[in-house]
Image (cartoon, rainbow, N blue to C red):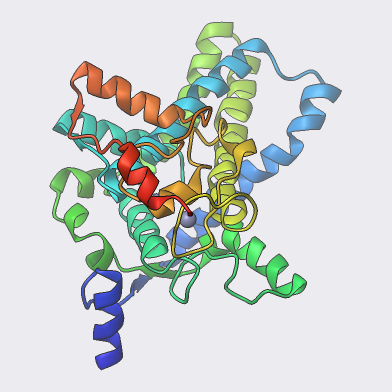
Length: 315
Ligand SMILES: [Zn+2]
Ligand SMILES: [Zn+2]
């Protein structure tokens, strides 16, 4: 008992158990289905595009639009706002971000936020849901750790206890509703591109190719970009700021991840609205938050100050 209380005090998330109910059979089946089918589409993407020419400009444009929208739903919404409280938002923006984040098909919002807060509370230590260092430092252990941190952990049926890690989210009726509607947003994110593709090209082939590219391939591509932050950005890259874990900045992923690859700064200063804080470190998500602030949609944004960054920098 004492040990539980001690560790709970250390991670700042109370004394409730780490895990909630096990994931039931249907949601578990859904997890496999909605991760592996888009993944199969991603693998089939290259031959379909170059071999058979089944990729048109409409598909590309729709994929880019839905990628950008849902990626920002995760980075600005799920991550910087809901998980870390990097700014305050009015109700419409709050619900909108929760919905667009859900459309990335990275799990219902309560699961995502609880998992990610647990990741920060135990980063690269026992209790972290997805540390690449979980199995040791030998080459075999690291290969296994990479797989686990990247994709394997998603299928773990032991779900993070939202009552412990996200009680603020559970207390919000709007958030509970969006969380319950995850099936609906799954349908919307896959069918909306198909519908638009059909309407724009006025053909059934347009429905099918837009569903494939802007639905399935886009979903899986974003899965892998997000998961790369969990795997690569805890293994490879630079560590210019002081964090208690192995989080790194990995510039090649900066643009695709919309700023999330500046992960070392993020772990050093989790509530900061901006992760790419140095000259030339592109952070699209921070730009979008900046724009929202200018439009008056969000407030009390936690922008990093030069003094704070100097304090966090490795001497
Ligand atoms: Zn991390
Ligand atoms: Zn985070």
